Length: 190
Image 1 (cartoon, rainbow, N blue to C red):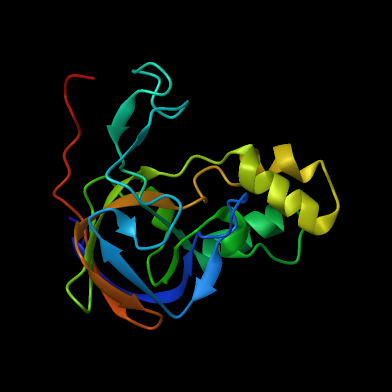
Image 2 (cartoon, rainbow, N blue to C red):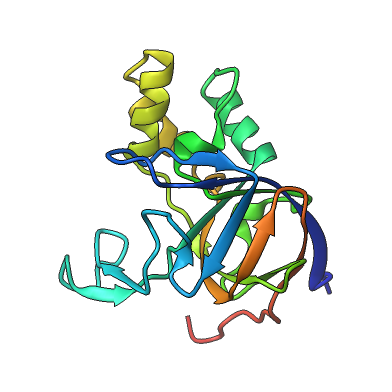
């Protein structure tokens, strides 16, 4: 049986407060409240249903399980390599946090908890599906429109995950984070 806990580190943080873009602004510290990252454009207890939730009419109000976006440097480097690029910065993907020390971070199962030094905690919702929004940002940065669509394929299972706030608190670059995976069993009825 695999270990259910692992220590990681916060490598980078950002807030999405730049009007008209998904690009985030790097900071040394973020504050989590029940809405998400204080000051971030994705903060809120609820959001409107979109293509990610096809079960409800588009625009219906649903719980905001996408309060925080988390990525990993090794996976961003892998996407850059697949696209033959020198780098992809986490802020180009609209990320709020970059972790180090968790292999295959995108594939952490839902309900995994990230417990930070301050006591703040996030709960993993699920993989952040690649989309053309970050692809457009990358394409504009490198002056190559083909990167918009190519990003979607290259970033599959490497785009990080979305999470929601379980406990409020402050998180700083360099903080330790305990990653606690829930017990997992294959669902026999599928």
